[in-house]
Image (cartoon, rainbow, N blue to C red):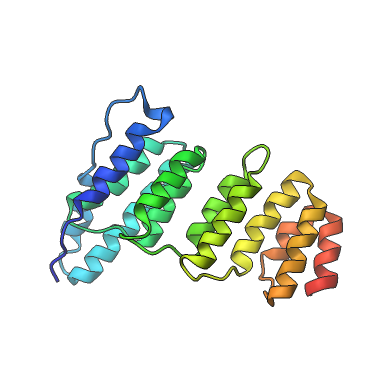
Length: 218
């Protein structure tokens, strides 16, 4: 299978890096063609689809590593390297880049808007990254959180599950916003959303919310 290179991916990521305030004094981002080339050559015995999947997974891992270390410029460059190989990024790679940029939510939102829509389709995990990013602001940006949830539902037809609600409850627990946390648990119950294995862990720090969750949903 021949894959058409998506040069706009590289350009958009680089442009986002250049235009963001933290990068105004940094030299332009350069792509890293070596990121996946060695892996592609080493996996010559694999099918084209397997090599592409392997390259995407490797780049996603590198983006997450750069993001955890605060190396946003390197994370952008890692994603751009896929375009050099003629490989379009997938949703996990784009989501990892949004998360890597989430310390600057203007940049994270800009990259989200560029990557998702015409190029890729986000999933609930992609939106949960934005929810946590806006929730990590001081104070949390609840209007943007509400707008993100509306976009997820109305534009992409994704109904929130425990993945999204856990992100919201994390914010409430961190900020001791008990009333809002209870409202969120009530919304879960009203929407028929079952808690997952992480939900009780999320509210464990706040006894009131833990008790309310058990009474309402468990």
